[in-house]
View: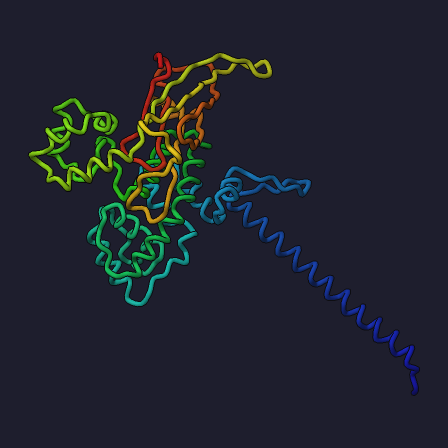
Length: 376
C-alpha cells in the first residue's frame, strides 16, 4: 500500500505528540510525587505545615533552617534534644550530631586514631562508633577546647572544617532556645560559641580563662589586688601589673599577657527604661547604649581569637531574662565598632531578678549583667 509523503509526515507528527504528551504526563506525575514526598518530610521534621486548603505555612524550625542554611534533619534534631535545661555538654553533643557533619571524612584506620583521642578528651564518646563522622566531630571539637596535639595533619584540616560549620549551627541553637523562652539554654549555646572561638572550655567561675599564663598563682595575685575580672585587669596600669606579676612571669610571658589584654574590648553599658503604648498595649522599652572605651578610635571590630582559623568580627547578644525563673524575655544580636544605641521591648510587669545580659559571641569572661530594677 502506498502512503503519500504528506500523510506520512502527519502520522509521524501525531505519533510524536502522543508520546510527548505521555512523557509530560509521567513527568508531571513524578514531579507531584516528589513535591508531596518533600513536603511530607519537611512536615515530619517540624519545618512546615500543610493546611487543609493546600497552602504551605513555614514554622519556626523551617525559618531557622532557612536562615542558617541547615538541613531539616539538623533542626529536627534540635527540636528533639534541646530543652530549657540543656547544658553546654548537652549542646556540644547536639552540635556534633548535626547533619552538616555527615560527610566529615573518616579515613582508613582513623577509627584507631579516634580511639586514642577519646582517651584524652574530657567527655566520653561512644567507643563502639569510632568510625562515625559525628563521633569524630565531637572529638575534634573537644581537642580544640583542650588544645590537644592532633595525630595527623589531616585532622588539622578536618578541625578547620568542623569549626567553620559550627558557627551557624550554634547561632541556630541560640535562636531555637530564644524562641522557646529558655534563658539557661540560650546562654549555654552562647558560651559554646565562645568556646569555639577561643579554643577553651567555659567555666562559670573562671573570669581569666583567655589570659595566657593565668594559672592559680596569677589569678591569686589579681584577686589579692582587687582585680576580680578581666575588665578590672585591663584597666590596671601596666607598670603596676609588671610589679605584682614580676615574681611569676618572665619578660616575654608578661609581654604576651599584656598584648592579649590590649586586644580585648572594654564595653561600657548603660540602659534606661521607658513605658510606652503601642496599639493600646502597655509595654516597657529597654533602651541600651553600648560604647567601646578605647584610647584610639577603632576602624573595625576585629575579634581577638588566636585559635580560630578564620578572621572574625565581634558581635554581641543583648538578652533580657529572669534568672529566677530562667525565662528569656527578649534577645537581639548586634554588631558595632564604637557606639550603638538600640531598644528591646518587654512586658511592663517587671519582675524581681529580671536581668539585662550583654554576652559576647567570641570572648570568655567579658559578659556583663545588670538587674533591671536597679538604676543603670
